[in-house]
View 1 (cartoon, rainbow, N blue to C red):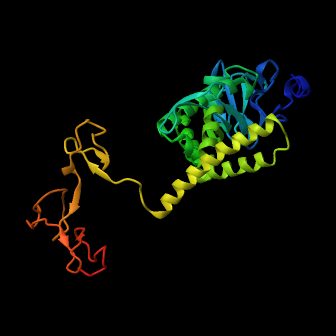
View 2 (tube, helix red, strand yellow):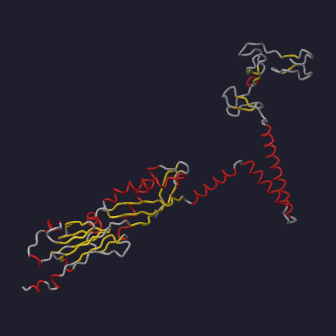
View 3 (cartoon, rainbow, N blue to C red):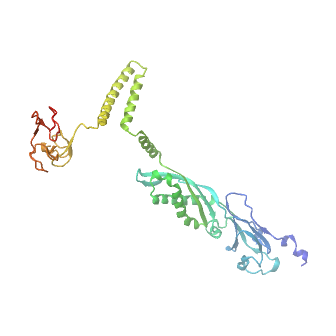
Length: 380
């Protein structure tokens, strides 16, 4: 065989094996080698964020990191696994070359297709919905090919996205239940819950040869009826004193009734409403005035049988029905001011005889403990 035969294009051109990715979602690409034959001396170029995997007879032979390689017996570790060249310079060997994209794939969407049940201390059982984004990358090219990609010539993120989303939702639901964060406090704990979920799910992603690099919770929403209840509670907190707010509304209603231009039945209805509102306002204002004076309309005493609190005017206990004896009412001792039953002749504390005091000037009876006479004003 002459030298020209040895250099013929059909047998001696050096093959260049490389991959330029023009997509944004390709995880794995199989290089189209003709008849799967790679010639001795072929050039292998692996760029940053790539890994090249050689597969011989169905088994992964070697993984190449970024760099430039010459496929020959001198500097290619794969040849030690494939065996020596048996037929010299002209003999190619059959192998498949897979390029794995090791960059981060960002802005992938996740969300809960169905509400997540959660037990909350404030609202009881609530149903939550959540959504966000996540990022992944291939951390183990060999494991990714074995467990996920297989012999696919072109593998993209959409081919595994469904599986990853279901894995994320399951892990998020479990993390949400374990965290026991109240529904009202979820918004302030998005970052903590995201980090906890990411750490929890990384072991699951490693089984695919992947790494979960980012997991972000954008929003967790409550059912509409729970949000409406929260809005009402917030409104009540803004209103503050409900009694004063009712008086304010009553005043507005009276003003609207007075400005009502309709006549006849409308006028009568307006007047009736005005009278009713006026009575309600009068009662509310009376209560407010009583509160402002700092006094109460009734005094309280305790039942001699069950100890329940009753008004001093009650003849029978509101709890047990026992008769409220006069002895259950108390007055201060004339000497030590200790509370004793009405009508007692001696004090239980100091033993002083309980005689009605008289004014030394006009001899009028004065109340126990009084310092001045109610009749003449004489100091006692």
